[in-house]
Image (cartoon, rainbow, N blue to C red; front, side, top):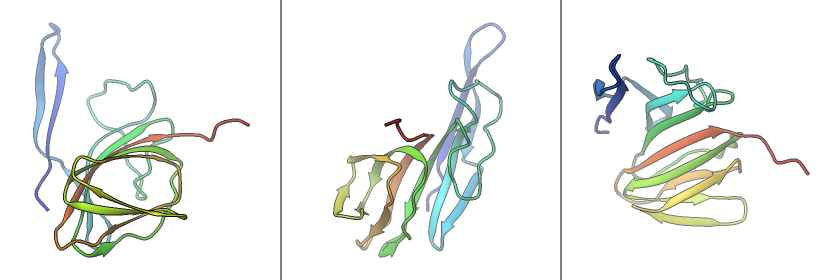
Length: 147
């Protein structure tokens, strides 16, 4: 997996924007054997506080309660992740390669440029190709609609 470059910005005391961090995302985790997630940023509530540090991220990589989590996930060639259900709204953008989203009633083949709006449904990812697949995932804590 190539390191994910993370650029973090903020305004200084005079209101001028500047970069405060430019380098490899410092938190890289193995979600499942061979599947790596680079944590880009996390917030602990909405609206987000423009804090100096990101919120803590749980071991299961769920967004913090009331917050959000942005990560870049690399799925190695010929790898299937186990099914899971998160209580989150996820925007998943395929950056490189191709992958199959496995749902209860169907499978959907995705390629670079495709986006999935994952609405707290049980799902799995399967990279059936001979090359790694890279997916950017922005997860937001969510609740089921009333009624």
